[in-house]
Length: 278
Image (cartoon, rainbow, N blue to C red):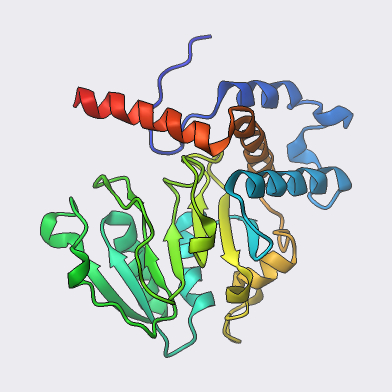
């Protein structure tokens, strides 16, 4: 077998060791006589997989009990709407920093739900740079501040969370999460589509400070409430079980590589090779 070198941003390449393990376990998972895709998500066997995956993710990122971890569907794009629906009351304003295609889409969705304040927009530079901080129009009373640390289409990356005072920071980390260590405690909420660094498409990780779960307005349907998903162990509906299982294998693989500090060093070396060639 010859594996190609895959530079796709997503669905991105998975570790070969993970694929080989999934292949070996495909027809008969843990002696069950069936695939993990066929096992009930409410069975003790799969709940053990889910709990282990969450424990490994918490270990990799140093996530404290102050945060809920959810394994959801809908991709990061669905979170563009769910974040303002859950974290801001009707009449509240939300702050958005627009630095590229993804944050622009997130801001557009937020504007449908809540009053939008665009803190700054990098359109004048064709999204090749982040607007100077002294030009930002921050609202100290905003329900939250949203930004996208890594805008993969334009190539703009913000390496440290912006200083926005006491306003909770919400970050779309689809292209950042698990690529290097991050300080989760600096964020109110983090969300990420799995297909970049976590696992196959179809799974979305949401990490949210528990006090923010309580903000959800009364008129938000139960299936769209982060609090309901957190309280239900991410099993309010049938979750993407195979993607969850594969993500768990990736978490174990990452730990076996030395964790995110080691992975971050490897990724920096790869980036240096590419940028030096450019």
